[in-house]
Length: 140
Image 1: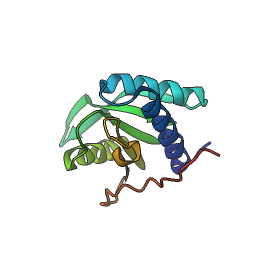
Image 2 (image 1 turned 180 degrees about the horizontal axis):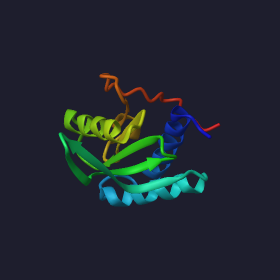
Image 3 (image 1 turned 135 degrees about the horizontal axis):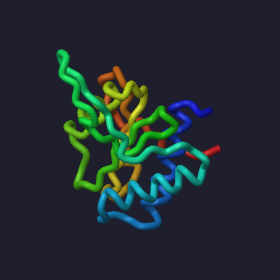
Image 4 (image 1 turned 90 degrees about the vertical axis):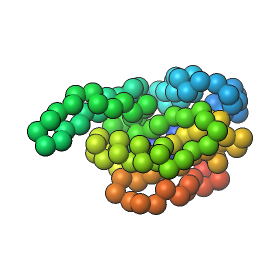
């Protein structure tokens, strides 16, 4: 059983491998598929396009949102292939984390020139959207 931080290191390393192998400029679905494949090769449980439900004052919306990937029922991932990440992407993931009751999420922008610059970790309940991936991150 891995912690959220350990899982985030696996995600980062696998994302970096994919970025180096296939580069930028492809559709999000391609990166999502490759990342799910790499994480599953590590023996991790990966759910793709996980639906989240929403309720408001007695109104229940089943399958209201979709998170790109959920790793080991602990870490939610949103895959992007865009010019740059913005505050909307961070707010979207933060809401998904809250609705799914996940402690940690990651935004991965595969269109960044340097992969590490397109990665943001977001903790549920914290307002800090800083990119805190250490450039010396490695699998042990």
